[in-house]
Amino acid sequence: MSVFQCRICSENPFNLLGNSTQKAEKDKKDKKAKKTGERRPSARPDAPFQPRTPEEITATVKSWEQYAHPRAKEFFTSPAALEEVLTQLAKGTDKNGDPVLGADEKCVYWYGDVTKD
Image (cartoon, rainbow, N blue to C red; front, side, top):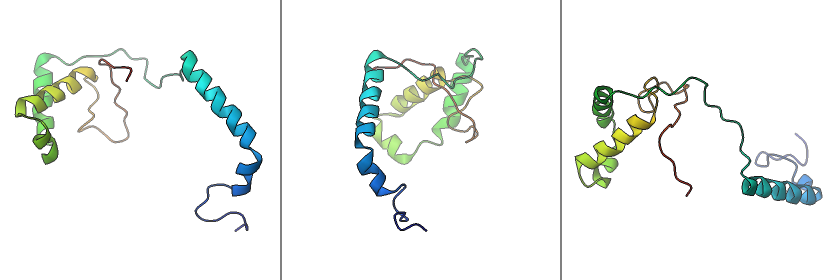
């Protein structure tokens, strides 16, 4: 193990001192990219969005409700409020993806409304 490589530091701490101008330039470039609206390419597959039918939404929501944490049930003022949130989740995700019961290795993409907050 190198003298300057401790188990906690991910890199040599002295590198940070010499590269402060490079880091400042990189931060400036990142801020500029955010302002101009540059975005990284989406990892979303090219397959078209396949919405769930109303019957599939109802069945999916019923299967997801049993996995809701007790604190989630306390948070929502009524069971209908929790059901509404799960319904929006079911409407905004592809019928071939399941963010609750699906495989951990498979990404589920959001196709619903988004805000700029």
